[in-house]
Amino acid sequence: MAVVDAGAPALADQPMAPRRRGWARGLEIVVPATVLGILAVACFLGPLVLPIPDPIGGNVLESYLPSFSPGHLLGTDPNGNDILARILHGGQSSLTVALAVNLLGLLVGGTLGALSGFAGGITDTVIMRLLDVLIAFPSLVLTLAVAQSLGPSQTNTILALAFFSVPAFARVSRAATLRLRELPFMAAAGLCGTPVRRVLLRHVAPNIAPQLITFAMLGMGIVIVIEGALSFLGLGIPPPAPSWGNMIAQGQQSLSATPMLVVWPSVALFVTVLAFNLLGESLRARWSRQ
Amino acid sequence: MTAVVDEGPPASLAARLVASPSLRLIGKRLLTAVPILLGVSVLSFWVLNLIPGNAAQQLLGAEATPEQVRALELRLGLDEPAVSRYLSWLGGALTGDLGASLVSDQPVTELLWSHLAVSGELVLLAFLISLGLAIPVALLAAYKPNSLFDRISMIVSISGLSVANYVLALLLVLVFAVQLAMFPAIGFVPLGESVGDNLRSLALPASAIAFPLFCFYTRFLRGDLVDQLQGEDYIVTARAKGIGPWQVLLRHAFRNSTFGLITVVGLNLGTLIGATVITEQIFALPGLGQLMLQAINSRDFVVVQACVVVFAVVAVGANLLADLLYAVLDPRIRYGSR
Image 1 (cartoon, each protein chain N blue to C red):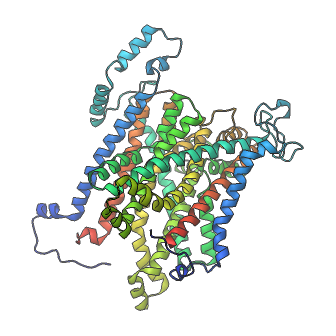
Image 2: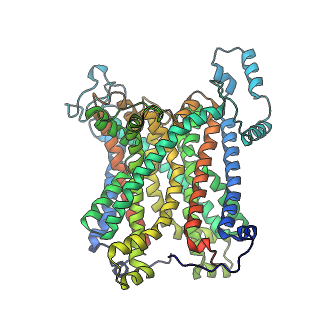
């Protein structure tokens, strides 16, 4: 992963790649990144700035209001809570959980993978075999069991999901480190007697970071879906606190009468996950071109 | 592709079996699967034991007297240390005895078999639907990269990958069960009762699982095919011989892409478990996922432990099978080229 200029010659290697000008290729990254930025601002700042009601403690007399009602843009749920407010607050917890899980996974998994790839030999074998066990483990099952016994909470969800995101990050990090190990500057660092800690921090980490961050973008989408699934099953964010998953579960009970209760949080989920997937894919394409 | 390799002078069957590279690979892979499965069983046992609270107390509820709790603990063997409990569980598991459900007292193996069939059929149908659609779509897309069809199929597949399966399941119920009334929204008809009704009851859940898979396989296969068509020497050779584009795509590129596809399908089978848990819950199907969710909610840890192991066996087994198929199909491995 030496730093290579990402100019026009890269395109020449790909005769079948769509011929787009520089700005159009940039769009693949800018558009999803902007959408995510808007979503994050809306979820975290929106409730503070915009005149929307609280996500809980609504008036039951105002329940099941249709979308585009005055004062309730997306209508209200069976408890008379404003759906837009719940979507924005639910987005806060989805984004927080996804970010925390991926940061933890990236740091722990990334370190383990880099150590494993750099050290090789018995260290490598032991770490990777242990991680193989985690990969074969049906993680949702364990997450559900832990959530059921410890009681559903945001912290438990984060810890359980982070635990199982470690092996995937470790694999990506190990593969990247192995490729790196062949390069001259690594040999030079070794010959200079640079301490292992310093090599890992100063030489390996900055070079494998792009791949790990790209992978984390795809991971964000995955975690948001899984967190939704846990909340959907009633083992994630506990109601009445809003989350997209428990809003969908609540809407499921009156699916035929008021489908919009399911549709709105589903749309929020879809747009967010799609933006993360598109961003991850474009970043990946960009790095693999280099 | 079909090079005939002279295998030298005929040896005895036993000697040839020992020397067979594919069999060696099979043996090696089986050996690595054993510690993984042991690791999974230890980890799950440990975690389920780690969970705070007294299992016997929780099963009996808050009103139970200490004597009742003590009696149940003795009956379940909860007074023994965790290591000896694990070893006796492992001994039982190896001889096909997974204990009895804490709630219903039924043997766990019986429960597993009755629920496994439903999940198995569901997953099989999902695979048939997804692969049956993905292969032709990917071939058409790769036939002319960046054509309108290719672009549309890529947009559909990346959007499809962003839809959560529970959302998709509810969407399918809303359209096909509520609005159009074509399929039942919930319930399951066993295969033995009526094949048609059985398929109708599984149509929506299988589609909900199949659609994301279809998107994933289409993307994967299309990418692999295009890479091969662009870069591989044998494609250039085939084209130079004057073979038509469809022939090159089907007989040369696709045959090679099946290797990658097999690996991916094997890996997917392990992750499908998550999808079945939620889908079975939404459609009220009596499968493994539902069994496990009920067991988790009623704190029936014997059943949960058994389910975890079954899921891990399926995941590891699917990977193993993919590796073996790979070995059987790839002549370089079959004939052990060095």
